[in-house]
Length: 221
Image (cartoon, rainbow, N blue to C red):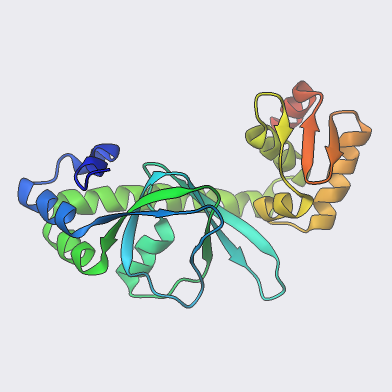
């Protein structure tokens, strides 16, 4: 991909003045990372603003006891809210990011980010709009973990992650991290779904056999 081609992936950048856009393109670089790469972790400070071109990155929090919760995912066309917050606050990361797939992204150096966000209202609008959307998503995660029924949330997540054949490649531990709960809680609930005939389970995989039953539960109040 040529250096200037990536701009077309982000409509919010199209309104930038020519001099600002030229400076952005000149200093940025496209990076590619294989699946499984740990992109950042707690205690590290960001050195670039990241815009995703291809792939998916999982941002998660890990407690001292090793319990994980998935905060959000960054996919094509997105920026990372935690990176934005740390850049603006001159702070270190308090979570980690892992590449779930092969990833291509644009890295805008910190010096360029600081300069352009100070000079360009259009760029500020682009950054803050994406940031506010993600903060809203994070509040939704907090609300779900605190108040929503785990059986309802599990049904929703199974339907979201299943392919067209109803197959899901996830372990009980991975589902627990997705939903911010313990593996034992997920295992008990999956066993109940299987007892009802809604799913079948195998090592590291789940198959949905009655999707309509899960949909009814997923929409329960």
